[in-house]
Length: 159
Image (cartoon, rainbow, N blue to C red; front, top):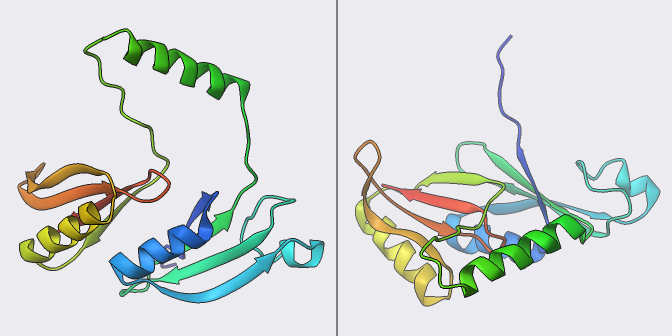
């Protein structure tokens, strides 16, 4: 039996903004929009949290890979608040330690050429996105850059 990845689900507080990012910069096509919010719709919402509302976006990419953006309920965790306070204290104490944000997903896109990596990274910088690594040779000698998407997931652009 042949196994094939169907889609990657990203639970997001900002599905519309995430959709716009992947369509504008990475060539996604939003081809399946499913409103959620009623019980009948929740069954077919692709894993959306019970009680969530909004739209589940299915984004298709060249080669057949899909990303499903699923609205999530905002969750305020006392543990997360305590962690944020602790990290704030560390950074305000003048420590040399740098705490990088965690991320749930890392997506790698082949964009065709070094020139395209440079152009797209420059455009993302000009439009206010945070760059993790400027374009250059990393790892196994491949030319790439890494940026954060609107929710802090890592997007790697590879020549």
